[in-house]
Image 1 (cartoon, helix red, strand yellow):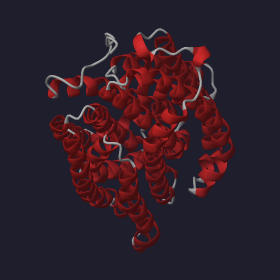
Image 2 (cartoon, rainbow, N blue to C red):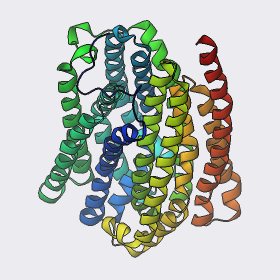
Image 3 (cartoon, rainbow, N blue to C red):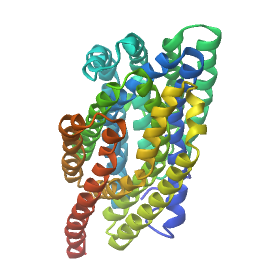
Image 4 (cartoon, rainbow, N blue to C red):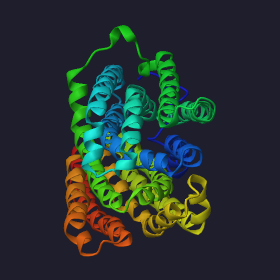
Length: 454
């Protein structure tokens, strides 16, 4: 076996809690910084351009996420597959996986540019985006999607690095990118009056900076993880393995986003002030969610490596530690956002109506958002075990179907924002219970197979 590089974490031996925390902190900070791209855009839109611009940006975040989630699922597959190769000791297969993943990111990124631009306006019309912000929303999305290649390359490249425990360098790239975004937002809005197009352009350039940094590291990476441009090709076995985990995970993300888009259509029915207030409050939810998903990524990577190595006991400990850490962090952050809600919303908008709507969303969502840990951590563990279809099915039924039914059949009975948003905690409870049961059933079977082979 080749010697591990200095940026590689040994997940198969030694204490788990400290390593999981060391792994998760940079991932959490990376997710928060990614969210700050949109948050900074929202701040500049709300404070410099007005509530209509804020509504235009906030109303299309879910549509953008809808597209991204499919390919983010593929990056989860890449992470799990490379981590499995490490755990199995098949390090000679890592080179094939690295080049396959990079080719996949380039193809998906180019496709997303055209698909996103062609479908932006129809989707925004479909979810009943208020007429007074529609043109601004379409403009923002058109410019934003030009940079989709950078976003996907960064995320797939980060998945390669994180599969071996290197979570710090993706964070460094986002720190540089995030600071660039703040500066460019000011330039393109306060100095050069380009409005929402300037905000989108700033984000695109900043994402490009992060992608270039990841590319540089992959080109100079040691051992099996180095990218050789002349060797870019798709390995059929690696692609099949990535797709087996990534496609169900991606479809789960898409269905999840579709249900949120459906709820967004209900929010849109209250007007642009509600859209703006909801857009401001969503930033709090996303920050907490990214902290939680840092432990989800830890669960995927640690479980994948240890399961491949036949370390059943360590797999079980990983799930328990990740669940406990995610619950504690999620509950603490949600409580903080509820307590500081008015101050937080004031960062994004001074419009009283928008603040009132935003406070409603904060109160309803953040009170119980920590419940998402119950299904996110278990779903991540299942993907680490190589089982990705079951979490997608559970999410489809427990989250997507329930939310669609709520919006179309329950919400019309009482056209109230609080009543509409109540679907979130209800779906979290249903999906969480279902996913925990599914994890217990599948993991018992998977672990029994490992015990027999041993």
